[in-house]
Image (cartoon, rainbow, N blue to C red; front, top):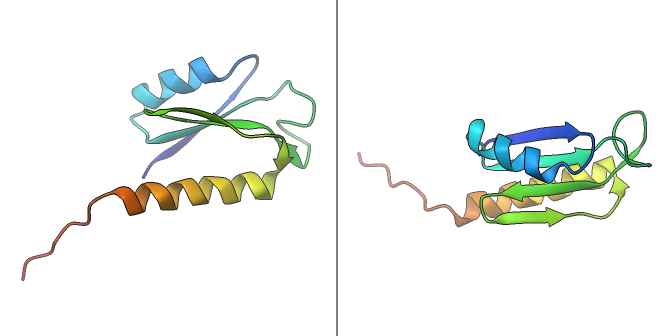
Length: 88
């Protein structure tokens, strides 16, 4: 699974959708760095997770909590993928 990040000013979803296709990633974590309590030099973030299936806006939360949600989504994505059988 490939995860990209899009730190934008203004609505980051359109840029994230473009990055999803251009970079051929499975998930883009997008955020508007101009929002209060989001972006750089703060302990919280408010992101939108963008996949080919759509966008999921998360509320403002601690960056460690955002990381946990990203890992949860990666785990869900990996579990949904069919496993490859290895022949011997």
